[in-house]
Length: 202
Image (cartoon, rainbow, N blue to C red):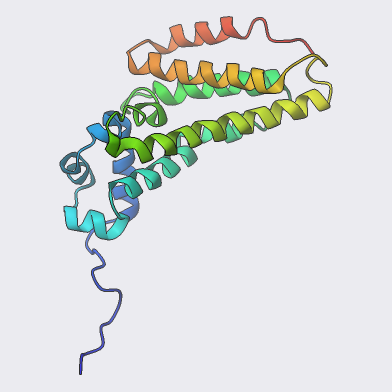
């Protein structure tokens, strides 16, 4: 007869899973999905490979959880921007939030969702698909908000909410790429301001 085990078998102990996930976010943000090797991840997280797999599943699952955390944390500006009272306010807040989050001191530059997309091998296919869905979700949220603006008369009747949403999200992802390349915050803000000067008047 076997003895009864107390608690879950194989559960890693001796580390803070929440803190470890936060460190995984930073590792994926800095190195991308493929660039963040298991050794880089476990070193950043301060845990063993066994503990990483026991707590978070495989690397793809860890990335999925890290992306969710990033979206709720540094990427949380999008949800806040969608609450702005006007479409122009939404667009302005999205670009300002992108600039803020991609140029934060003492953090990786750029966007985790963009850096993570630098996965080129077949092994990275699922992650690429995850990130495509992540970007499409962003576009859909902005499109729905701009559709509401059109319905409320905040955008001219001839406006195309889907096109405006694509414009703003493309600018946002472009800002992230430029930030990762070392372009400074002031220059990015000047570009965002210029891009929104021709916004359709209400």
